[in-house]
Image (cartoon, rainbow, N blue to C red; front, side, top):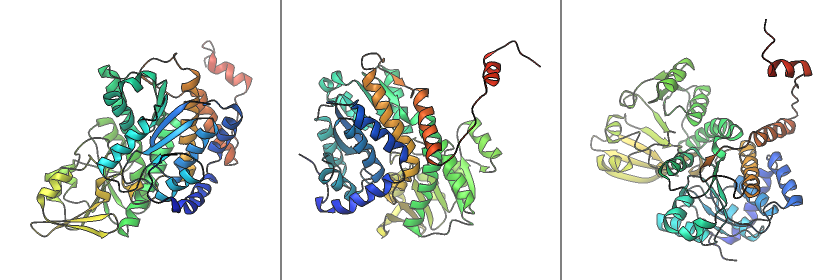
Length: 419
């Protein structure tokens, strides 16, 4: 078996992490048992470009249990857990190409290794894998039955591909599933982002002016958690409805130009490019901390920050680089501007990834069963998957809910019963 991981001898520690995460992923475990019996992916070559964490490892185990011939690579150079990748290779027999901190050349080489597996089904977190397949591997593209996309940035890119007519196979937008988007993005990103920032900096969040750039589900989660820890939260938005929602949720809303002057901690979660630019860095106070929790490291204009700096002090703490400006003010950049929750911490808790990855696995099953019947566009996750995953999650938490009576169901389905 070919693979490229940092150190295969880390497998023992990785297996412990995988098993620990599995304890908090009961829905995915039920999917794995279902797959083990039914083998819906039997003989299907799969390539998955995902964050290589302990939670992802349990998704990989589930896909393999379903019969998939799976190869994996990282969707971000800093999100890999090296002990987990070692265990996937040694203990579970799944080829992995991923090393934490790999340079861009290695990152794309690893992706090519996954593509050269000649998959008929793919999984993406950011759409890099699909983008490379469509650009550089047209022959492989012709054989792909479908793909799954895990994150907002990837879905945005895929809808652009669909609009431009370059998407050649169906993609299921797992990110847009309520059981993923509403919970993973809000509760997962909210908690894990603050966790990573505290691990990297050891700051007290209470009393800080925290600027959250973007008020989608991720931004809502980050703002909510920062507020809960006692921060004074300011939200930056470009969409009037979201800005109004932030105001109604009790947050200050202003432009980034205004917020740059008062912020202690800046967190970007937009999926867009250069939302904090050179002129904003120039206006920041001494000691300002800047982090990104969006998928790609483009949200911060790091080149602009570098131009302003007379000195860059690397690794003043783990995952903290300090940029000293001409006036001796210091800007602290976390995790090289890459998504901080996975680079400087462990990403989302297993409990929330349980729903996301159960949805991901079941979407793969749909992709196989409907092969040849789905158009080459971005599709939503079927409602029955959403309901099944949510119901099982409630069950695993010991929570029961009411059911509609026959009378209530009839009333909701009728039009002739008024006041």
